[in-house]
Length: 288
Image: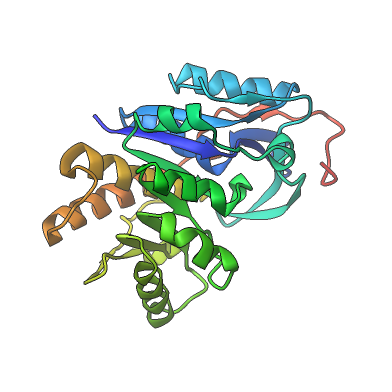
């Protein structure tokens, strides 16, 4: 059984058009998805003392995600304002991660000892963590999977990529040749696997030698929120469940890619990253 530890963000996604809020945040999502896929799952992040922080914590507990190393502060849960356009989520602003934005995780020796009990640590840009935190993981021998989102020319590439084993990108805005060039560049910096999700065009992986691609199965798309997180999670879980985190042959890599694509496509069949909607106050509007 794979063991996935997530370090970073939890928020609520406030859907203006529905007057509903859904629990979310990159690492929060991954920890839930890992649990759905029968992995041992953990989340290290920050919680405030407001209702939404409490609700998110309860959802993690419901899915048996370990929160032993979480931090707690006075303040509000992060939020993102969201609208849907033909199933695609459109972000309209937020509060800079709430308590996570104010108190990004700083890993101590106890955290690192804890994370050594897991197969991989997962984080991303929205965690607000400094690159030096991921250097700690590298020095401790803890594999890192990091989601760079759609940033392809930022200092974070050279700062964080050397600490990664798995690097994920959102590349719908790039052509295939541009995407392949980016993935080659990333692998040259250290990662063993570099991934690009390209929306309805599927995903591309580069393992330092060859490119592999997968197309999503045909399915009605309700909401793309969390699609990239679900692909990342499913690839990692399948990889560690069957291939010790190192799928090598074409058959092994494509098995993980198809498994991830199927799971991500299913995740687009319901609203929110992980479901569990909560009503927003009657006076709520686009100001948050």
